[in-house]
Length: 75
Image (tube, rainbow, N blue to C red; front, side, top):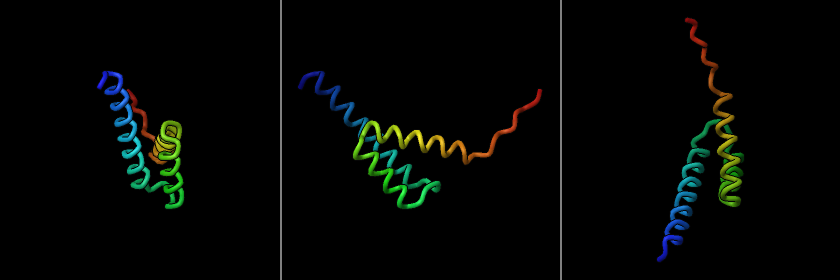
């Protein structure tokens, strides 16, 4: 087994781990309906890099918009 094979294997394991983590995060989210969650999971797994990146970005933006704005501290 060459070092190239080990690197490719590591990248594939990291990608699969990210997809699993993101899928779990989507289904635990309270921001979307069940049908939307299923569609996002399909996007994650059918388009691994692009779909996962897109769903990750959407989740980040939605969670930011749901948080109440923090007040700025006055010195």
